[in-house]
Length: 284
Image (tube, rainbow, N blue to C red; front, side, top):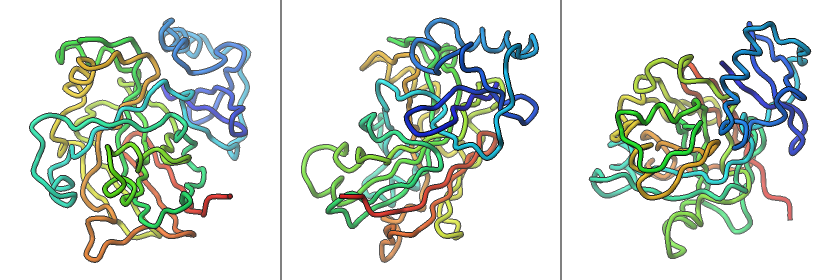
């Protein structure tokens, strides 16, 4: 299945893609949130679709798309999960996953503008495979980890590198500004994606291909990450894991090439979709 949320920011309705068309499911399933996933919403939605989408209506194709699931309780991110990116970032390949958090308030729609925060001058981009949890996961085994996953999406992990590396403390400061976690354009269920370890991942800036890799280059696989993270915190239905980014970020270029107001960033993952953001200055 392919799930979307559409409409004005903060007032999104729920939808499902059937034969390439968005069908409204509002009133049947009011939101794709923790309760939806925890109470078997995916199976119920699939049954509704198979029964002919009774009461659903087609949504105009030019309607704004929001993030495909409601704001999660947490966004857990994995750093340095591609060897080439670990090298351009500095330091060796980690022996265990490097974890950090993005504030849920950074969450935004897949085509919404990304804002340069006040005082920021080192804005960078990262495309990431996003894993959306479908069940509560605590101390799960790697062998069964994918049973806890609802599906996948595309996330842009935007970062101010100066805030991240030179303002003290952990990386969360540089990762959590408003609009720094756009996700979408849809949530694709596991059965629709196929082999999540063999998907092309890419980023373009103003049409120039910057990142171009595959999830096969990830150091730690999706099942391992779900299992590993669940040893340290309980993952709730609807929570998001951002699984790391390949090489080609602006910080890794010589000289570095950070984003400027007016830039267009396009990101995509094979079989899941494409997102894009225009860079703008934050409104005071």
